[in-house]
Length: 110
Image 1 (tube, rainbow, N blue to C red):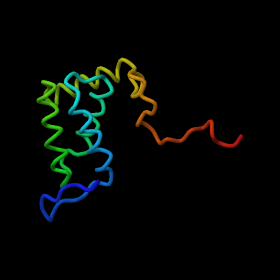
Image 2: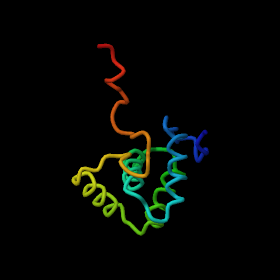
Image 3: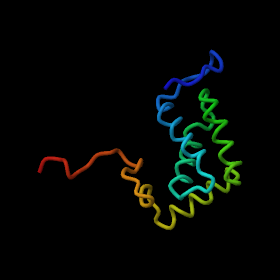
């Protein structure tokens, strides 16, 4: 999935296609889960100040309005989650967490 061309000076983020689908899924949540809060904060960090993906940036702003949060409140809630021991994928049967390198030491030769 290619990002819409807003202007010739915009860059295309290498993870745009995957992130676009994630943002679309987040927009469907009127009350965010812990995983969704962390996912939104992660995407804010990735796209804040990025010279492109304007549609993703607009939708992240829309997401905060939908959830009734400011960016500071989103970050504060995420800090509380992490401090309490939260790790992505703990809830809602999410099979894979998007933290770490993906290296599975159980698959390595012994």
